[in-house]
Image 1 (cartoon, rainbow, N blue to C red):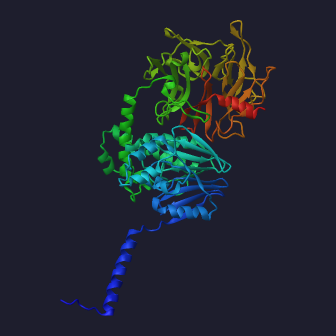
Image 2 (image 1 turned 90 degrees about the vertical axis):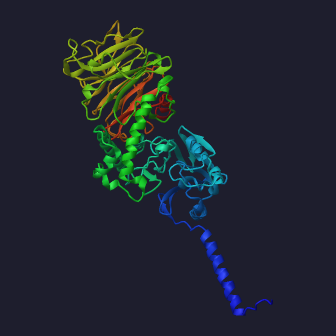
Image 3 (image 1 turned 60 degrees about the vertical axis):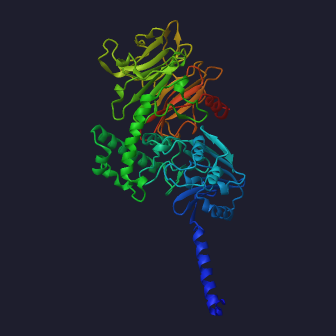
Amino acid sequence: MKPKKYKKQEIIRVYSILLILIVLSWCSSVPDAASIKVTRINDTILKLCVDDFVNLVAFIGPEGVLLVDTGFDESSGQVKSILKEHGGGNIEYIINTHSDYDHIAGNSALRGNAMVLAHTHCKSQLIEYADLEYDIPFDKALFRGAYPTITFEEPVTLYFNGDEIQVIPLTGGHTDEDVIVYFKKSGVVCLGDMISPGTFPVVKLNNGGNAHTLVENVKRLISLFPEDVTFIVGHGAETTVKELRIYHHMLQSTIAIVQEAMKANMTVEEMKQRNILEDWSSFNDPKYEETTAETWIETIYRSYEERKNEIKDSILKGAYLGQNPPGMTPIAFAPNIISTNEYHQCCSGFMAGGAIFIFSPIIPGSDWKYKPTYFMQLKDGKWTKPKIVPFNNLFPYNFTVAPDGHTLYFTSLRSAGNSSILLKIPNIWFVQYGNKGWTEARMLGPELNPENYVVNYPSVSNSGNIYYSSDQPPCLGKGDIFFSKFAEGKFLEKQNLGEMINTEYSEDDPFIASDESFLIFCSSRPGGYGSYDLYIAFRKKNGTWTKAKNMGPEINTPGEEARPSITPDGKYFFFTRGDVNPDWRDIFWVDARIITRLKSTQFK
């Protein structure tokens, strides 16, 4: 049979249809170009918002580019073009705030020879080849390309493009791998997905997140940075410290509502049906299931149950409650154990060669005069659960540990003659801990306990000399630091430390070094960083004091710093830090060598 002959026009039409089909097929396989909105935060920092969804941050300078998160793999080409348009050279560093696909998928295409930094748990998560929440089947090669070059679990500092860049782990809230990035000179902090401004937060319980820890982390954020810092989040608009306080209040309030419902034996479904978070409906974002009130209720409930089980099952082992020692940047001491969102922390100290830890938490809203004081004991390598000290009926509310590590000096409202009678103003007492446990507490003599005047926060040196604050005369201001020498078994006449230490404002909470080489105290004097700051003075060879100076932004914040102390072994400096709204205060610790550094930089 002869083949059929086609007319020229028919052949052209068939080829045209085939060409159209090929082009349509090719177009459908090419990903849509990403939409990237560029916002200049300052002269060196750009925010790149990809597809009106995820924010990347580019730090551009003469040494190259540092990129915080990398977005989607498909948008990497456009990111490179934008960086080039804005004068960016090679990408030298990439910092991943966590392992979500939209934050790390561009690593492969963008990294080149760059160092990629991320939390140790971030790499562990990437090795699983799948994101626990989104359930997207990512290519294994893409994940391998996203692996960090350097992992860490402690803060890391980079010096790049003329700025100091602090990479700070802040885990356990959103996930167990979150880090934040602080451009100190630029005043910018990248938070990743730690918070979701304007919506209920996303807490990944299956990836180490917990609602209660998130509250503590947000609280720490407020305390860490100056008021004028700009926070860039993973999704949404920039936010401020002021707005972060509102967000923190929302977290505290909604958690309290759910916990009250739990006490009333309501189920999660009943809570959802009754819309118990109705007063906070402005944070309900039905666009995503993760940011709805219903999801947040369930997250709080499950977080509480997990936290309860963790505390029940936890065993603390080793020195300093088994905590990783701090470096030269203060961190909260024993988060979720001692420094928690449920209590306002006051004083703390280690005794008996580090085998006793004593601390005094205050329940928010309670009368500060009646807070309990607890101690924990290291036995057979394990720490016991907190127990109320046997002298708790003395109502101690400010204390320091003497250099011998066995004597505790404190102030109390208890009457010397009757433990059930409270005085209007406190007196100075001391108690000791030895092989037979706690001794009976005894009040110091009248020379240190004047009638009608407050005495507070006694601190004793190796020689027995005592330092304390008081409003008694002669007083330069609302409260001054006083000193009394110990000689021939008694304390001599008190002395005001004078204008090198005291001002017309309040000076309080003195801590004297064991050899009396330096004095740390808090003051409300103007010119500081917050409501109360910590100040330090050093003793000269002739026995006089240098002019006291602020301990600087490494220690002080816009909140309140107080209750300073050095551990008896001399290794760590402890103090409390609170918000400008004093609803909470946590115990912080830092390497005591920071004092030597302060002396070399501020007292040349």
